Image 1 (cartoon, rainbow, N blue to C red):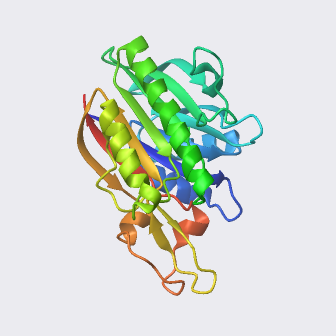
Image 2 (image 1 turned 180 degrees about the vertical axis):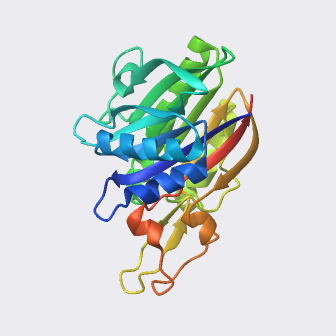
Length: 273
């Protein structure tokens, strides 16, 4: 069994971020490999991985790449060096054979890592971060990014002939309520491509605060794990999504993770390879 996951660690390190709490959530995730997004200071993230490794007996390392040319943020794939070695990486601009990959061209920020297990079997892991927002043009932009992403998955599957895991922040603001048909679109797109949407059964992977007056913490479904060429044994959202049970939480009740860790929750998936 292989455990994979995703964790958008908001603007890491953001104002108010407690590195020790971030390390604690990575310990809780306890994945063999996981995608990360919005890493701003790689050296600070390395320190967090060292702390998490010391607590779990793992040996975490990360390979990072730019989200977009104009962004200071990076995304990446974290892997346990006791389980995997890094064979190859490709940044966004290298994922399309025509070299046309860019955020402006409708491609999602992405980083691909080809990993080889201690048993010699290989796995492709891709971290992604799609267009944010709930406006109609942002929904349309995400649909274009999904089309390019599916093409990338098909190319990777064909070239490397290995299972593919794509994980990250898909910013699917309409997924919970199927606003503007976003959930319908995602489920249809993955089904037609023969890709398993491992996170389909979840109801919470992030929290946000839509009402400035009430200041409630409201659950959302932004993060997903896609799997091609492998089975799924289990999936769960951790951190504040587990603590709050995916329910609305009041300002009075509090939500320390939102301010001290991230507005996203770690997500863990067990693969049957």
